[in-house]
Length: 281
Image 1 (cartoon, rainbow, N blue to C red):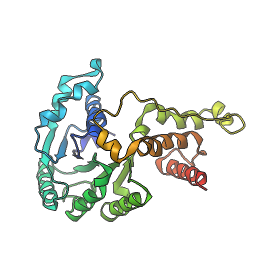
Image 2 (image 1 turned 120 degrees about the vertical axis):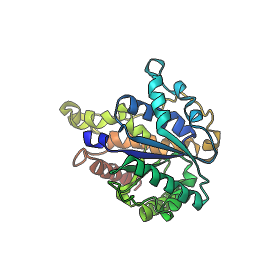
Image 3 (image 1 turned 180 degrees about the vertical axis):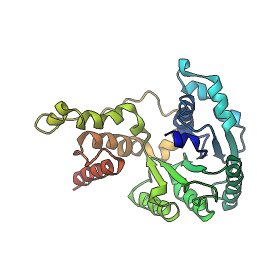
């Protein structure tokens, strides 16, 4: 962990002004910086279609953080670490210019720089952006980088099976499986993370967690917010894709899957997949 914190990182956020970024990602970065879980040499590149100042990106951050937790000094650190870049997602020349800016920043930071491309954008734009990134060599390390750049894609991962498969092929073509992260932010919740420990490392519950002792399972999603400014997102994606096929199916899998070979990501993924494949037969 200490080695990781000593290495500089460039975090490129596509859609930094969007709802997902404003509601989830920026508050998460705030807490990571506050608790010193990010390298001091972190540079955040905010990618936006419009030309906007950094101050506008963080002006609503206070409303997303509990009052007693808010620290102006940390917000200033975030502000100072952020640089905005205007990019037309359909213009490949803009990706080339972005790469040159990243190369300059990487040179300033020194050797061993990590790069992470975070796509906080509508899922319909994923494939187009991944292709443009690949075609302009964003997936390749700079000479002084310590590792290959990574791509992080938030759910919903595609609009349907066909679009999800297209996105998988695009990511594999340019970044490869080892460079690609597909995430569901529900799984970062402490309660969700504790399910596996509760089930498989507690002898009392492990012995009775089966059909002989459990009659039914109910998963209830209590939302504290409404659609608010996400009307376009819900018109295109819908609550079914936003909540059911990602968040709630993930929770269902954690609750009902068989014990994985080990509590490691690869084995947990295989256990989930076996459960979901059986449920569709």
